[in-house]
Image (cartoon, rainbow, N blue to C red; front, side, top):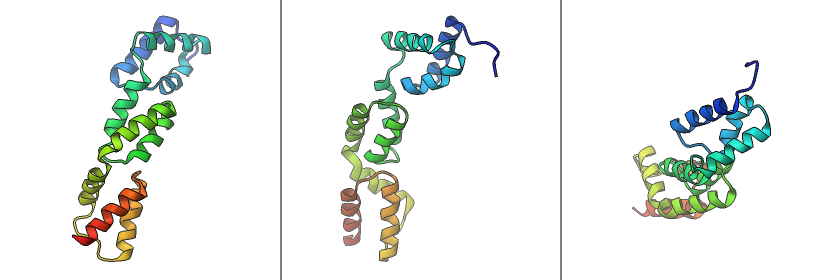
Length: 152
């Protein structure tokens, strides 16, 4: 625990160090800097200044995070993760639906990596459905994918 809060230049330097490592959402950066800020107003001023200089962007953070998550998860899971990280709901919905364009193929690839053989029983099919649901894929995609796998 520190004895005194950071001065404005120290707080700015701390924020820039965090942003140099990776993108952060405004809410995430505010949470990390809150313990070091002299006041809530000083923190808000810093975040506004960073956003004005385009050093801090929820949009850019959300695009990067959605791209990372799209390798393993479906649109619903991506949307919930972005909202949990402080991204506005409209931005999260737009980016998750954009990443959801190839959900069927992505779900097929994830299923193929996890399970090498086709499902042999109803219990195995249900297990795969739960797996894909947990990954954030819609019921329609799961049903279409597993019914096509049954016919192959």
